[in-house]
Length: 508
Image 1: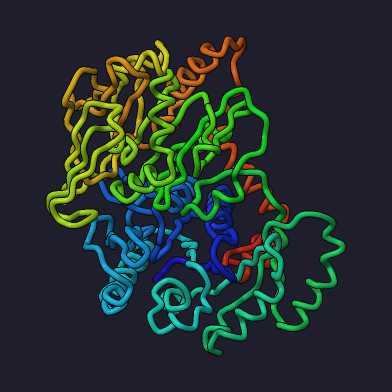
Image 2 (image 1 turned 90 degrees about the vertical axis):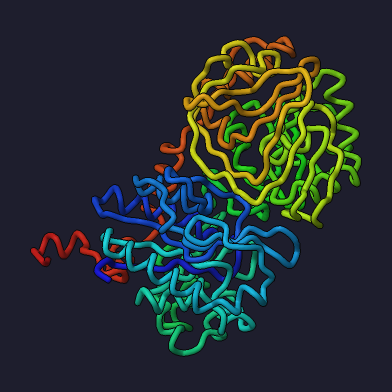
């Protein structure tokens, strides 16, 4: 392997590993380093379709864009998409392999580790620096013999490890010391330092703890990263709890919070706009009377449709649609809006299962074993009453990731038409309801603006809402914050990159 490597591991899940990797990708890219992200195994329901029609974790796609490169399946060779509490669809090199339980998956560790090794070696031939992200904690002692995501990958890459702890959760010092204590000596020696993440307050009050940690471990604290007000895509729904908004808003969008919610990053563009609030809801009481309902994707349409009915949200959404509140379904949400969903071969349930949908769109959906994964360009052709007149004929870039075919079975019009001439989605002839398989639609500014303006006009609002900041400005804010809070020269030395001092001394 010719590239330099560094691995960002965490004391647990959701401590900010993906966030740190994305910021470092931009930071080193701006220094002129050819850099790529890598996560060997990602368990996530937020996924992305690459240009060549392969599926990877959304977080790795975001990190690639931060590095200024196109998302590739090499950045995330194994993606696990939970379908139930005990099973997950295993996506290998961007294509579904099969649904497995944990025992079946772990029995194939050697095969999976070979996939990881090959992808990593390819990246190391193509880039100067590969920033590797771990998964969960490296100190899960019940899983250490099956590891293909943490120290096993660090050993493959011969990478030094930086351990990230979330101080906002409390117990950061205990989490660091406990992690080190549980690592076998050979892996403990790989840990080169720590990053304290999500700090709020006076760093002077933290200094005694930092000094104690360095003295206790003999390893440096490479930085204390403040709580940064930048939103990037979450890997899973764990982050939704901390993102539930309390801000006042002129427009409120309600989103059912399914147990198996997927690609809820479709809603993120709205969360960045002042005056717009996105509420993820679990009951009719939380739903209330929003300005619009957006039913998101799911990894199991039939199970989450049953949940929607069980909670009473199904009936509440139907009432809202019939009262004139716009309802938009995306992917699995689109399937739920129809009349029927059938599963003849047992893709999500027992073979031959069939369920009635919300009957807000005249469509029939059949789940199939053939998974559609592709990027799409097209134009909106239907849905004026919901999206506003400017949206019609608006061009968009989006992507599809779904197993199923939905066929119109009644009056209405297609939602969009791709540049290849294919029609997608359906719009009700008499209700403000539309559905589409397109993820990432509202990343398109013109379409997003038209929809929000239509909602605002319905409420008699004057003047435009702010349009939020774009991805590039967010990732720049993150990288600049890391640049201020990390000991970059020390980090460069850990990685083996040249520092300004070595450059000035003529060291090559």
